[in-house]
Length: 436
Image 1 (spheres, one colour):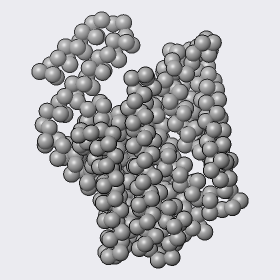
Image 2 (cartoon, helix red, strand yellow):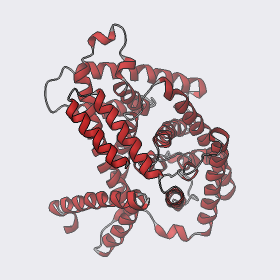
Image 3 (cartoon, one colour):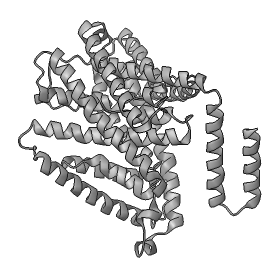
Image 4 (cartoon, rainbow, N blue to C red):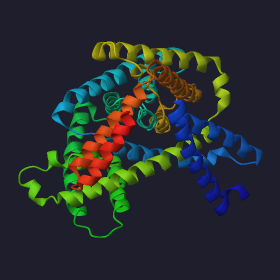
């Protein structure tokens, strides 16, 4: 087909990436998630494709691969942002607790809704279908909270990352229960988790020590290839592979914490920091491209007609009410009064779609409408948009305060990593003008 010729594909992908960059700019000014704009672009392309006689089903295999690679890049990107310091311990534990309780409670309520309203849905299958609908999307949250205060931004990074990992672990635990050959029980699950953590730590130390000795300038994609290989091998061995990515990111982002005592002697801190910096840049860039292509392809493959189904609307609305009801209760317990805009930031996205397509054949329920996923994804994105806009209007000086905090952090980092006093003075002067 002419539309899929080599040069046309290059032109199409290039235009999509350019539009995604523009969407990010729009998102920063309007608080409309760029992901929502990408899905809309995908829907438009779906109708354009049909007009030229194309078939959107050819994109399904691509969707799964993009989802897996995108998930790895997004978790790695988030892990590289996490600082493990003593003063961060309470915020991390609070975010972990909220993510865990929110995930389990939301899954339980969503499972009851699905089991009651979807034909032929058993409670076991309902839990499996409900899990993807209960996981926060770090792919949407992390790019969307950059304008918030440092404390709130860190909370959302921690919470969404923990929700991703815990949700994926819960999903594959439930999927394993459906296959007696793979079901190791609760004890086997926790043993698997411990083994994964041990392997992750050993692999992380080995990768850093080996890669700091590689003199070639083209080693970052080699490093990413190694991580992708470890992830895929871990999945083949039925390990919680995403933990491997998370722990590697935490180790390289917090080298001084993990390399202590005699281990410090083997670490070349300057070379390791250079690897971290370059990896941070390339991970962010790769995550941006993968995320862009994934949500556009998702938009191309979704069936909009299912949104007109009254049952889909009823189930989706009940799930949305449960999501924000549970979130409100948790935030009031753990954060007291300061719960906005955190209450509204609970979008579903990449992992929801990816895990839905990963449901085992033996667990597929014909009566479940995929439109429920689309409804919940769009609904949570719109709620987040409204909440962010409301918060911005309510606190007109919040953005300037956030920018001042960010400038101060940049100044501190620059002072700690340079000996050129004239550059420090220039940066401080610049920040003072911004504050004024």
